Image (cartoon, rainbow, N blue to C red; front, side):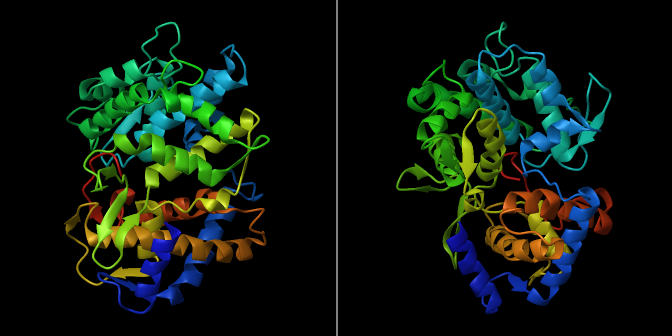
Length: 386
């Protein structure tokens, strides 16, 4: 991913990349803005990792912690499998919701939108046993529960109606169905210590740790191997499904794997809570999504050569290149942000830069520039990429 992103960056720096122009003179001001957002959100600079767990916290209440603290877990491994189940299903449901959708939590009357709303809706669905086929064990996802979920059930759980539309609803349901089918078909990955479930990947990763230490890129490798078959309408090469990897006329195949990497970041905390120390976290890249990428457009670092008002597909070369450039630019802005904060790479790895950080800054500048805070580009979503 980094190799291809740096190739895209080199072409853009030379003025030879189709669709995009690069203005590195605007990058210092962008870093200033990101650093100011970090200081505003985290005055003590105690920034957690960018992970799905942040989106289960509202008004200082950690809803997953509240739910899990009421459970008598049969050991740390059992809790970790449940947290893997939750993280995997919630992240796979995290593609862009659209500006019109919102979730009003029936348990608290709290109203949440976008990624936080999707997180809360998926958490409640998980809590209610919506992914489990075992009524005595609701806090799990399993092959049968995932395979039977349909668009109507998901719409009901996410409070979707004509006045509250959710983009890519049926695509999200089909993605979870295929997850269930894949889980059932691959016991060597998903059923080492339990019936087939997404959380079975915990046991695979625990086994791959050396003396209790696991390199973060191994998490991504396992996810790409395990989840490769679940993605619909993705390129294939020699019969192998490539997932979030798209052809570009100048770059060849461009791997991006946004949701898989977002998930890799989100599995670090359950692993560490269960006693597996995760290292080499900067071996993962930044996330090629519209908040990070939108930051660079809205701050003038990237500009489309042609009119950006039209609608794009995720497979369009302009979008593929933009997302790859986002990865390269995140690597370049990270040390600039650290310098402004007076922190080292060890103190402030990329996962903290993202959380502190570029993702939040992208959302903030989007709100300032556009009503509703949508991305600078209009991208058709099938519910499985953005």
